[in-house]
Amino acid sequence: MLAPALRGGKRFRRDERGVTIVEFGILAVPFFTIIAAILETSLVFFASQILDSAVQDAVRLIRTGQMQSLPAGSNSLSGFRTKICDSLYNMMNCANVKVKVSVIGSFDSATVTYPIQTGNQCTTNNGVKTCDWTIVESYDPGEGGDVVLVQAYYKWPTIVRLPGFNLQDQVDGTRLLGSVRVFRNEPFGCTGVNCT
Image (cartoon, rainbow, N blue to C red; front, side, top):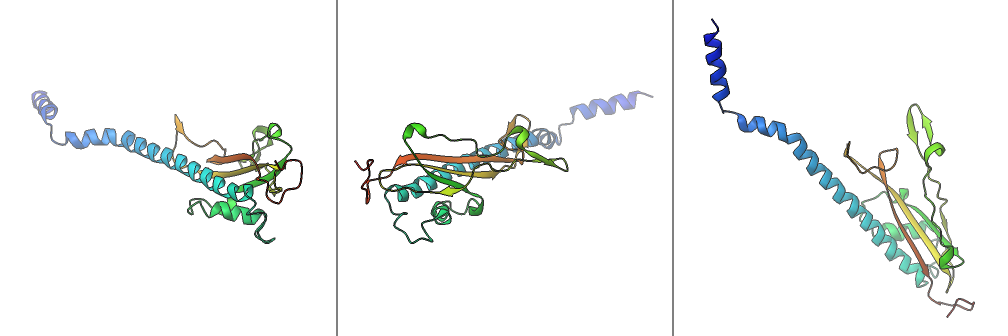
């Protein structure tokens, strides 16, 4: 009575039809997960580089005095943000780029604080934790010879969220991208002590 079942079991073990699809089914999930992780990592680094380059290009306008010589509407926080966004290739929502431009006393006094609430500062509503921006946007490009600190930040949305691989560093599932520059303005129209 068991003989037919044993013969059928032996035949089933020797049958190799469909082995490729079974192996693919086993390996497909890890394979596509690795591909998605590689693509997301590349995209995050690419976006970070794009933001950094855009800030560098916009900062050059402040450093050389070109921003300061623009009409009042263009020589403003929104005008400077627009200059940054012109080089972002529509990869980021321009309205969500946070910018702070401030004159500082010297290179030694340049301090950068974390621009988003952390830990107990964050709020929880209906089980969803949110951390607001702490950076106060401002725009003071200074005059010739001034030392200027420029900060720009953006929350980049992440897609792949797996244990052991998770690029998000914010509680809302995003990754903070940032670019900071400290420089001395060129001595355009300068009459002060820092004009040499």
